[in-house]
Length: 380
Image (cartoon, rainbow, N blue to C red; front, side, top):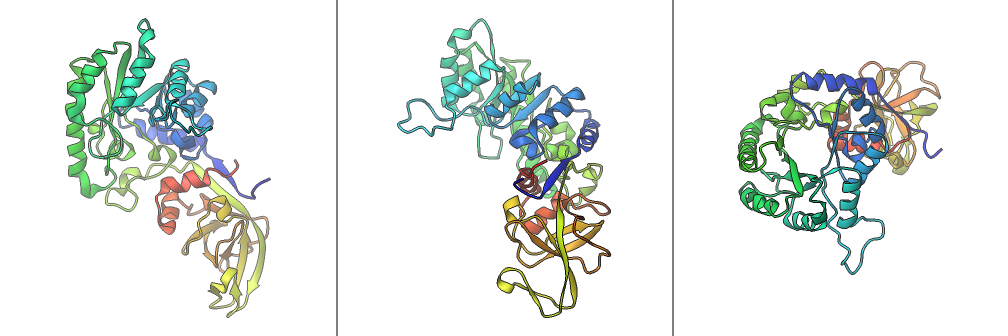
């Protein structure tokens, strides 16, 4: 046993969120990359598949292979595309795949790689020349404002020229990524991105009339479903996160139910006298007589060493006091009656006012995506 912490994945809440998002009327292509945001790729995908979901987005090609091996059918898009590494590199990291290996895996397992640059488009065309009898499904990435990966909208005519020379490549999907759809103050930029994306799509549809467009993320699906395209790509909201938490559009995500619970047992409960210090560096000195509980979770489990965090014990909030240690954290349970060793302290979830990933993210000074990805490494 590596840790005393555990996480519980509420697949019933996952399916509740799926139906909540389906109410938009948009076909969905759920994002299950990064081990389904820490929630467990095979189990999440299997649950979604049981409800008729037949399009998925993973990160690396290897995640797509994992999905296929777990029995998932339908369309699987690898959002990170093919590896940029090639066999002719003088030093090749032994555990990283090459473009050729990723391409072979994508073809073998009928995955749809995302192509976002000229070298990958040209190399994949070369690698698949002998497959003219069987088309190769690909997705294209268009950069409409994120400035990370993708062809620019004005590149689309040249993209069409390249594809005309590689008839074995079949572009089934055009994808872009919204920058700030979760920020109501930047709605004008979101609409600008959507307009650029529509222009790129119109250009490609001159040669590929059946290509589908996918722009909408969780926030777009909730606030601008009309901009989402033919396939929306919910991620954060699928796992119960409200992309508008703390904004004037908070109400749009209030029906979402958190999917991850994380908890650890109370190891010890004891009094702390006023003026007595607690933990490393004597960073906390009791301002009054207190009762302290020690929970079996620390930074080795992904729990951040930052002030202001809380855990939930018996449905009540218990502030973290003193420094978070490697596998232990101390809690002020003075006002929580009858806490004893063996009770559970919840980092996420819990009875009463459950702790949400959005709250933990505020305490940690980060985003809730990081919270579930970190805590998702804890054993189920």
